[in-house]
Length: 92
Image (tube, rainbow, N blue to C red; front, side):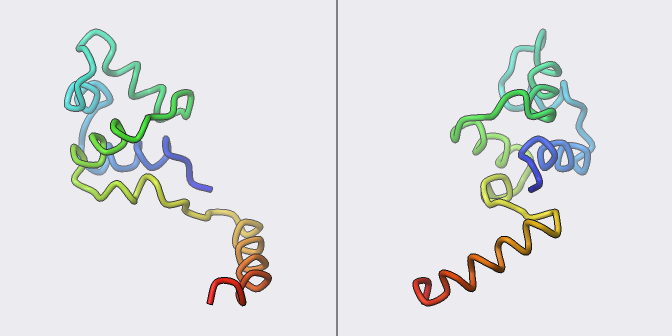
């Protein structure tokens, strides 16, 4: 599964922002902006919904890019396929 932190770092870099710049843009104090972003990118911290919306808005993406799980490992695809098959009748 691609983590929130990995998504955040990718989008920050894609927008050519430093950790400090992104942190300040979302409202963290200048003195700790880069540290806070580093904590989110390394998945040490998990943002609450309101902060996630601010990240999305600041980075110009829908919040769903952060909230919808993204599979990244073959075993995750296999598990998803299994449950889709098992629960298929219930989902229709």
